[in-house]
Image (tube, rainbow, N blue to C red; front, top):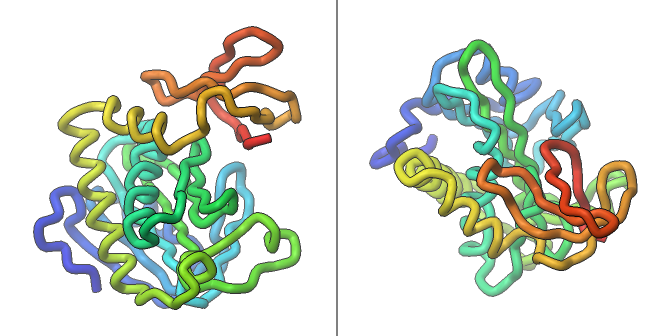
Length: 234
């Protein structure tokens, strides 16, 4: 079980062996401050209903509920997860891919899914910790902390560190607003001037992040604000 001592926003932890989805479980519970973790998920999902591969191989599947929906929570979580994983891996480059992925050396190590129901927000996070194999369609795009560090990491220790970092960043956002999160994204997200590609395949140039948490890009010489959808490095 997670040690909640000293945490400000996380008041309760439910640890499950198997669940359909930690987000679904947490939203059904409908009480803020609840952390739900599971060893495996049978119906894990990402953005736009995409399936999140969730085998029982020592990964982190977790959801934290918060009292009010906020579209910038995914970015807050991204800053927290990126900082935590970078600390665990030392000098390895860990970057944020707008709006909800964490990449190590260009490969996805974490996905974040924000959902809401009845005034409660669910912040779902999946981190590949000790996984070493994926379905064929994910082999070239996914990685894990184990593959990068060349050693297995104690799952409970990684989870405890991640939860503490998430709580700290959420408190920082609550007390100081979005600017610290935006600064982290500008430092560790898409590099300004780097090429990208919109969800429909249109080439673009990455510019930065707005104060609202939207991605700013340049398309055919014109500045454009991307409110939703996937924008990938080219």
